[in-house]
Amino acid sequence: MKVILFGGSGMVGQGVLRECLVDPGVETVLSIGRSPLGVQHPKLREIRHNDFTDYAAIEPQLAGYDACFFCLGVSSIGMAEERYRHLTYDITLAAARTLVRLNPAMVFTYVTGRGTDSTEKGPLMWARVKGKAENDLLKLPFKAAYMFRPPGIQPLHGVRSKTGWINAAYFVAAPLLSFLVRAAPNHMTTSERMGRAMISVVRDGYPTPILESADINRF
Image 1 (tube, rainbow, N blue to C red):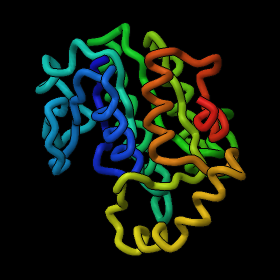
Image 2 (cartoon, rainbow, N blue to C red; image 1 turned 90 degrees about the vertical axis):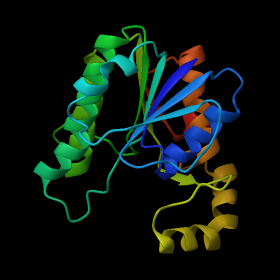
Image 3 (tube, rainbow, N blue to C red; image 1 turned 90 degrees about the horizontal axis):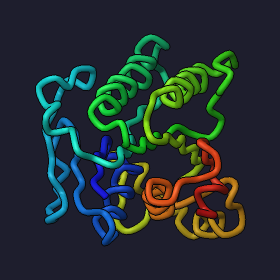
C-alpha cells in the first residue's frame, strides 16, 4: 500500500503516520505539508508545499498511490464561516479532486468529527461545513471514501499537540481517558486505533462510508 498523508504534524496525523510506519503492509508514505515533520524513516518521503488549493507544480509526484489519509483540520472557535469554509472545505476538496483524477483507484479517508451535519442545514456552523465536505467527497469517483468522526481521541506513543497546555491536560487526564476508551467506546478512541482503522478500511473496506467512534474502536 502506498499512502499520501495530509496533516502529519497534527495529533491525528501523527498517530496515523506512526501506524503507517510500523505496518509492514504500508510500503511508502508521502507527507504533504508546509513544514518538515522531524521524522526520519525509510518509508517516509516529504514534499514541502504551500498552496493547498493548487497542486499543479507537484502533480507528477502525486500519482501511483493507493490511499490518502486527510487529517488536516482547524478549530472553528472565533473564526468567521467564510474563513473556516476555506480552510476546511475548499482545501480538502482541492486535494481530493486532484488525487481522484490522478489515482481513480484510490481510497480517500477524511477526518471530520462527531456531530458533523450531513443535512448541511443545522445550527452549528462547523458541523454544516464539515457535512458539506463529507457529502461532496462521497460524490467523487474514488474507489471508496470513508469519513471518520471521532469524538475524543487519547494520544498514545508520543503523539503530542503543538499547544503546551493541551499536552499538560492530556497528561493529567491520561488515566481517565484510558478508562473511557474501555468503558465508553462510543465517546473515546485512541490515536493508535484511528491509524489502524484508517489503514484497515483501505485494505479491507467497511460496510458504511461514515465511521463513528464505536466503528473505529470495533475495526
